[in-house]
Image 1: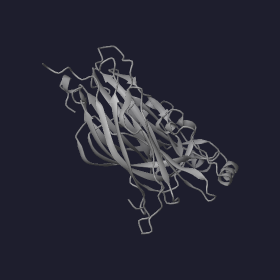
Image 2: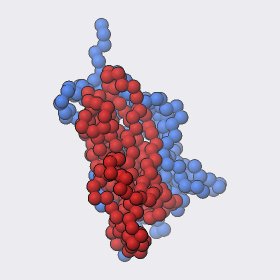
Image 3: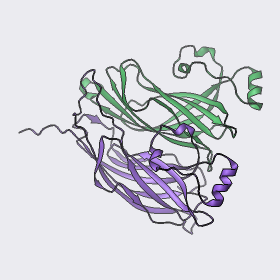
Image 4: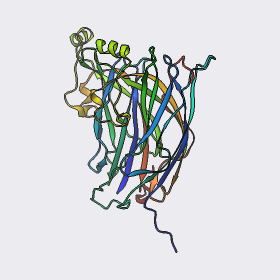
Length: 175
Length: 218
């Protein structure tokens, strides 16, 4: 079985209109992949930046997969939320990116989007907060049924991931 | 006589904690330590260190320079051998080593308070890597607690800085990022390729990490 190590960090996020951001992340893989060690999902701390506008999380990611096939290459899906001084959370953006497929260190910039809703919901979100959210998280990383959504863009999440592949050459796979 | 296939590999890391950028604070020192899973063991070098206290330079750069050496070698311990037979889950975990940094400095009353925590994985691919990591401090929950901790000189800190290297339990913490530290690593590995690992193209001029916002010296 070939193995993939994903080691890195969710560095932080830029471009969001709100400060005090946190990120909920998870990894989705196909049926041929098996997670041998590491945590498959998590939530970062809430960061309020003092310098500049980039919120920094430095959340460690350390995953070890074994795989029998190339289909279903791991995808990292992210939900960025902002937290106000009362502790309420409001959705700032959804995003996903594939884990890189070549060994080495990669800088990833993942753009995010959030559902727009009707003009009434947009007005309510501006004054009171809240706003529409997805019922099922798999719309973040799958293309099915996306055509129903009308969304607006959020900021960008920055990640740095290092890939370590093992035994891929044994199976003739070039990465 | 053919040599037996190796069962462990070595990771040799040397480098330095180069400098820091903290616009609001001065007279800082840093401590580093390494956090690693149970399948790694340091075989040579120092696992922890405390640097000197540095002050900002008088010129326009206002740089905080430590130039503090790092020199450690890790061995991956792997008693069951490195092969995973079909369908069997091995009993070991990888958890690559991370370096955890804590920066401290004096406050207005002269007490030693924490100015930032940060962590980054030690790169596993051979070559030269420069990393700039953001440093953050835990935030007080309420304004009253913030004032009391400023007055008494007892800021919120982590009881064990190694918590910074983990992802679990972070969802209940609120932090403030307030500076950056630049690290330089030179990595040499032994027997990783023989064990089947592909670490990617060698990095001769690897520069990674977020760039500080405009206006701060790089």
